[in-house]
Image: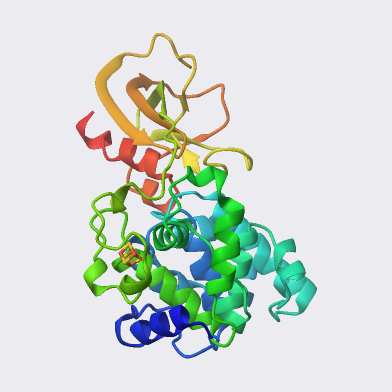
Length: 331
Ligand code: SF4
C-alpha cells in the first residue's frame, strides 16, 4: 500500500459519504445494488440518483424482477433520471444475467464488458465495488485529482495515458473497493472543480497544486461551444380535449418514450397556430428551443393516440416532454 492511498483510506474511514449503494470495508454484499447505482450514476449526479434509487429498488428488488418487467415499466420507474438509453441497456443486461448466467453476476472484466451499456469505466467500478477487485476507476473526479496532484497542466485530452498510469499506481491493491469510493468522495467533496478545500485534503502535503492560485484551472479542458437548435412541438387536442401522443422508435435520442409530435428541423404542421410559448432544454451536445403550437384534430395521419390529460401521467415522458406537458394547462 502506498503512503498516498493509506492517507486517503484513513480520511475516507472518517469522512466518506454514506450512500445506499455504498458498503464500507470491502465488497458489497449485493452486486445488484451496485449494478443499479452504476447505471443510474452514468451522466447523473449523486443528488439526483438519491431521489430515485430507493423507489427503483422497491419496484424491482432483484435482478429477476427487473428482467421480468416490460421495458415500459422500467421506463416509468426511470422517469426523472433522463438518458433513457441507460434504462434500456440496464433492462437488457438484467435479462442477459438471468438468461445466460442463471441470475449470478459475472465477475470477470471480459464478461462484464460484454453486458449492454457497460464500458471500461462502469466495468472497473462494478468489479471494484461488487467484488473488491483491484480495478482502477477513472472518471472526471479522478482525472481532476490526478492532474492537480502531479500538476499536469497539458490539455486533458492529450494526457489520458499518463493519467491512467498514475491512477493505477495510486490504486490500493488490498482495499480497491474502499479506495475507489474514497477517491470519488475526495473529488466530490474536497477536490471540487471550484474552490477545492486543500486545507482539509489528506493529500495536501504531497500535492503540487495545493493552495495554488491557479488550482481551479487544472485540468485544462478544451471547451466546445454547444450547438443551438430551434424546433416545433404540437399540442393536438380533439373534441374531448384529449391530447395526442406518440411513442418514439426504439433507437436514437429519447427512444422508446412517449412524446407530443415535435421536430427540430422543419415544421410538421406549418399552419398550426403558434402559442408564442417556448421550452428550453439542454442536451449533452446541443441546446434546444421548442416553440409550442396547438392544433385541433379528431384523427391524425401519423401513428399515436389521444389520451386524457389525467392519464398522461401513466406514460413515460422525457424531461423535455414533461416541460411541454407542464404547459398544457396554460394553453
Ligand atoms: S491538495 Fe487541493 S488540489 Fe491537491 S488534491 Fe487536495 S484538494 Fe485537490
